[in-house]
Length: 394
Image 1: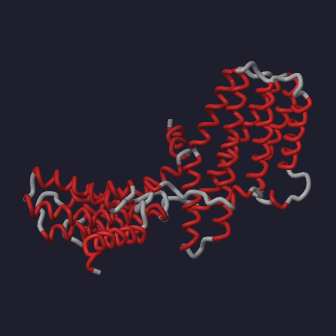
Image 2: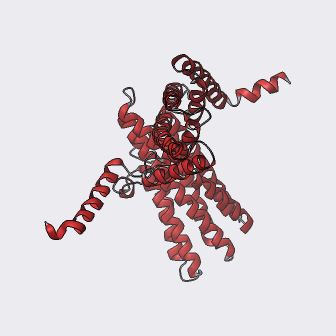
């Protein structure tokens, strides 16, 4: 029993570390808040618990969201209480106004939630001008301590976390291609193809997390003195390459499923398809396991994948007279998918470097629209109004 209990926590070391750091940060916030501000420990501990995340980068963003939310929420709360005194109307109007302000400033999802939450904390019992100032100070203390302690929430760097995620997903993609290769060689069923397609869709769902971690690694390298910018940029490109690779793996799974629905793959092409899928699987596993992969100039796994893809296309063209046209099209599609995988792994495709990759979703940012862009928009609107009203006089 004791061994099982120890193993329960040892298998979850990362999670245990994070909750211990979060608990310690909350306790320190309570203590510091009470020392610096009268009865400020509770608010500081609440804000710290809301702000702390698994990385310094994310906690800085959360802390900034808390600060923005505090300033806006407190201002709106004090205005509402000044108009209607503390009560039913003040609480309802505070929440509504906070939501309107957050929408007008294009705040992200996190900050939009923080605005009404902080406002409700500020207008709690015993509200006065001095109390509001104390709660604002407590919020800043909690956010600052969360940022400091978040540095210790994870033993790995942002680049290291990105590498771990990329390696884990690439292994899953390689294993799925290997399974599909064995299934094609043995003669797979529609049910098996459905399982492959479901696994491929799950791989796609992991891409946003990889992109977010790659963005964090690159952003962290820009301002943290010990981070390597070149390494972060390389990881970012590797994340994009993996995204393109996983998309092709899902397309392959869909093509095999459609083939199974239409009667299966012709016996004359089973071997070539299985070989091509196996070569692609080996290329993926080799690329993300070997740091010096790109330095190999001869006989690389991606060259083998391209050769297998070319052999598959050649076989399909030879059988074009006797085979079903739809099956020929699907087979050519598989060959093209495998060639794209090889290009993505070698990072020599213009699609990787010449096309701007979208940043993280706007909803994940503190400000969906930058303050500069918002100011320019407001200036244009004001100028239009002025010209409309006074244009004939100027």
